[in-house]
Every structure is written in structure tokens, then in C-alpha cells.
Length: 338
Image (cartoon, rainbow, N blue to C red; front, side, top):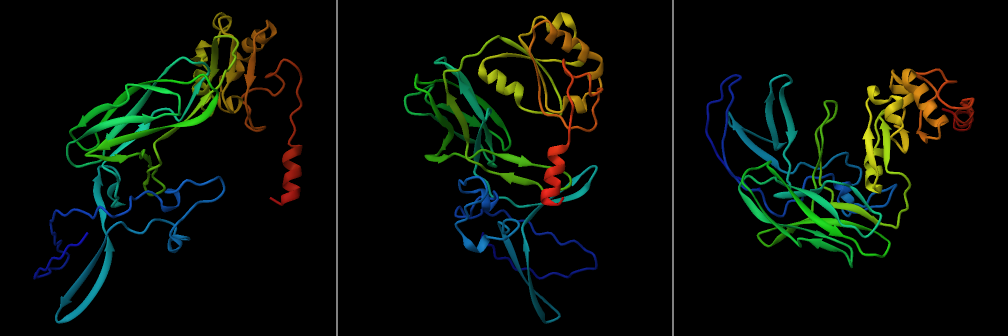
């Protein structure tokens, strides 16, 4: 951005001086996603094409201002990054870096899709405008060879910045097993954009804007399943319900009051979420019903739990006696010295 402004002013003590201007940034500026995430990379290290950036903990400011001042015939200069400032009714005055983003982003709503047979699936994509003006164009999804998308593309129009639209495609896989990906692509005024948007916003760290490629992993596999309905009892949080639905199961995400013998009889299996035995303080009350369900031939899958903070007696969460040990942890501790 090239801005040149000169002003002669009397500067009062603690007096705010405000300049207002409306300028466009250069289209050659890089987007403001973290520089180490811009290129595809394998696990364990990143690909950075500009060696001068390596080691920098964050991006360089998108726009820097250079200020030349003369006061009492004494000249000096200083630089300052362009920032966005706003006032939160609770937290007060807040700042975040000025960011350069594409005018539109497209997020595929599911990150992994499993096609267990040749049946089509509905794929939803979320189109969001980051432009300060009305924007229109079309969206399509790039699919593996031999697959089919209906429709091939969908037109859209968004009037305001920040508004979103959800568009749906019906995707039919081929008969061949394959591991591949879907890609969301937006076309606006003849230019294609294939970025998704992820915002990391926590009080203890600065806001982070990520612009990964708009992709979803797809798997076409002849998957044989048994049973139809699975009960899921939440723990500390995982994506198991989503994964099971992707496989074709009906998933009942059960509340504590749902875990009763009459309901369990209708289920083909029950899954405890990660660390359910550590986090659910009601587990001691309905675990006997779950064990009776197993005794009657039902399948109960217990996922990872830690050995501390059990919300149930350690001899009452399995149909047979189990002795829990921290031997593996102790051996690792001795080996690595932590």
C-alpha cells in the first residue's frame, strides 16, 4: 500500500489526532496465513520457500507505516504495523494484526468421507464472503477420476462481508476402491480461489487465521459392517460418532438418563468415549446396567482412560478382574529421565 499524506498540526498534550483515509492494498501482497503452513508438507517438518522467514515466530506485518515527523525543527522517523482496534464491552480495548485474505473462502463441512459402497452422498460446502462488497460467482468440487458430482457447479451471490451460504452437491463414487480427496473451488470474476478458513481464538493467545486448502479426504472402500445402531456415551471428547456415521451406522449419543436396560436392549453395540471413566461422575450408577448388557451378549467398547481420577471403583468397570499398572510409564520415565 502506497500512501503519502502531509499535515501541519498543533499537537496538544494527550490529544488524539485522527486521520481518515480509504486506500486499497496491493493485490501482490501474500495472504496472512502463517508462512510455515502455506505449502504442503509431510509430518514432522515444514516447507518454507523464503529462507529469510525461517525462525520468525510469526508473519511479518502485512502493512507497515513509516512516519516522518518534524517538531521544533527536529526531524525523526518511526515505523508501525497497521493494526485493527476495537472495544469489547467486557475486555476493553483490543488489537489484532491487519490481515490480507482472499475475497471468498469455501469450507467442506466434513474433513473425512467414507464411501462404503457405490451409493451417492450429499456433500455440503460453506461459502463465506470476506470482501467488503457484494460478491457473486460459482462453486464446484474437484472429485477423483471416475466419480460424478451433481450439479457440476452452483452459482451464488453474497451481499455482505461475513455472510455465508451452504451449498449441497451429490457425489457418486466409482466402483474401484481408492483413497483420494475432494477439493472446493470458488470462481469469482474469472479467478479461482481454493482456500478454507479456520480461526483460532482463545483469550490467552493472539487470534490466528489459517487459510488451508479447501480439501476433504475421501475413501472408497468395500466396508462390511454388522449391526445397525450404536450407542455412544460421551467422555472428554472425540470424533467417534462422526466416524461411525461415516461407516453407515446410526449413532445414539446417549445422555446419562438414557443408559437404562430397556434402551440398551435395542442397541447392537455401545461405545464409551475417551476418558469416560475419568470424566463422567454418573458412570458408577449405570455401569452395572452396561455390564449386564455385556453378560446378555451385547458388545461394549471402552476406549482410552487414565489410571488416575477414576469415577468408578477400578474393579467394577469390566466383566472380569483387571489389574491396572503404571509399569510402562515408569519404565519410560526411568529410560528418558522425566
